[in-house]
Length: 310
Image (cartoon, rainbow, N blue to C red):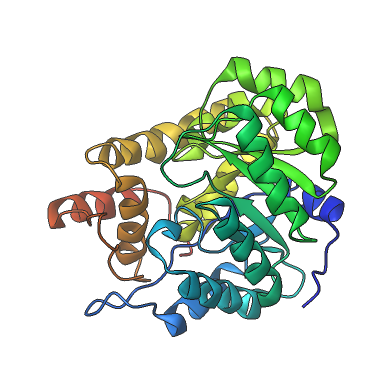
């Protein structure tokens, strides 16, 4: 299948709005992919205007899915998303595996690739550049690199890749290094689209906007889409007081629950889905679900907001 977007078109579209990172639905008994429930969720979220939908991303538990499951999830997202909404798919692990993921995404009809760090091993900048370039050469789709963990890209490395790979369209920051982000944006300017990718990216959205990061991945959008869009709108319009109020009302106490256990950045999103009546099932090991008390605490926090259409 051919993407509806050229890489440059995709980059512009991604940077124009909030980004949806849907959870992946699992059955409660066997933890298998619940495709029907997932499709329903994509259809529900598709009623809201966003810059793009990232299927089977970090919030979608890419790390716990098999290769064949990833392809099923991406295909289901492509087929269920509204016409015109770009769908991006994940690629990761070793270089050859990442290439296979990218090619599978293209077969499934995805519009772009989010390239996760290589599995386990550390690598220098030259090796990371070779890794990204191999994936870019293997697909005609636009590619966004996710800088985090063992794959933190410097400004010179990104400039090298951007010169050699026209379909490198974006940089997603999962590190939070303001100095590095400033150097990257200063060097590459509008050549790339910049995405905030730290856990609960709303926490960093306002200061990052000044660095050219016009969008971010919103996990909260899964269960409070109207709140997430209100927050994004306040950020883009630089309504500082509104952003601070929304942080105080919900985001900050939400992150206090999230920080209680490793992996809760994903688990709390699925708990939020349960709290608003759109259960996505449990998380897969090695993640663990929130306790019943924590779920009740999250539900009370959600109910304390102004009425939301969830």
